[in-house]
Amino acid sequence: MATEPGRVLKLNDLFQISGWQQKIPWKPFQPGVDIYRLYGDGSTGPTAALLRYRAGGRVPLHEHTGYEHIFVLAGSQVDENSKADTGCLIINPPGTSHSILSQDGCIVLAIYEKPVKFLTPESECNNPPTRSSLP
Image (cartoon, rainbow, N blue to C red; front, top):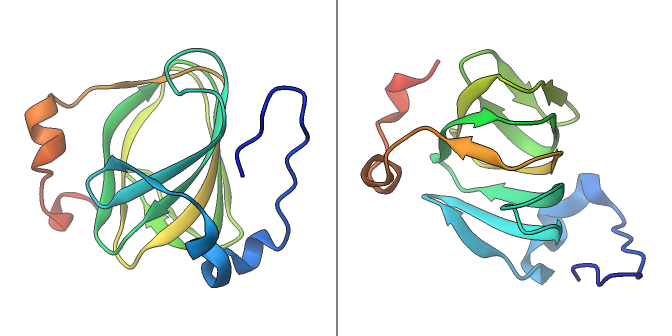
């Protein structure tokens, strides 16, 4: 499903992704969060990916080194700034930081200009704080 260089990738019915998410070859990303990269490797240059948060899934504290666009396709997520429900677009500018939690699960389209810089030590990523640490 991921795009190869020179090939066009088309995903239909993104707002119904909950109904066909099993067709996507997800890979583990963070505790309770899977990723499917559409392009880019997440380490260099721009990247686009689908992120699937299971209930209680979270992405630890990280800083944006470039613009990040998050489009919530299903469910909701929360960070230190706000709650984002299905259909919400969030644009995080360079220099901002946050951690994300999805209490009930969600799927988002994430497009970022440059890789993010994780600010949480590796051991804390494997044992994330409880849900009550976020709004």
